[in-house]
Length: 201
Image 1 (cartoon, rainbow, N blue to C red):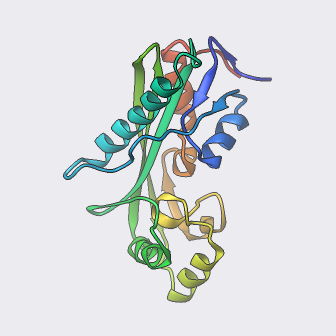
Image 2 (image 1 turned 90 degrees about the vertical axis):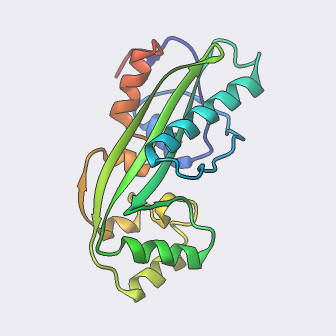
């Protein structure tokens, strides 16, 4: 059974994880990756950054694809990993990934995702979701072998919790799907609140 939507949904993301998560709960959508800038502004708090970035992504797709988007709703999302005072996005290269994983080893960190929905040229609503994780201590050999897998190359924090890196996680509080890339329960509630989701499941 599929979710009953009031209008078409466009996903302003190229992330295969977000596509799989939405499809897994029966939500139909069209993929239209955003071309919006994802740079964090100096001093911008992680929660403010991901909320703004998600909104910018959805807005860019709606404006660029008008009038084809018509009455469609556009969903944008952005995720970062926060360790101490550091905000970790996607690693630039293997050396950067090693630096990130070294910082996460044996430490607690947060995964913060912003989700925004646009329709009719304006933002209908947004959410920000945070999950807390604790990694066990990782050896240099484990980090080296994990980087060689390439699993974390395009992921915030340089790891994929739904993959081999699940073996790093000693504790998790909050939404698991948020750590993967999209907080499903919260996103479905947002879709319901803005009038997009009529019935689910």
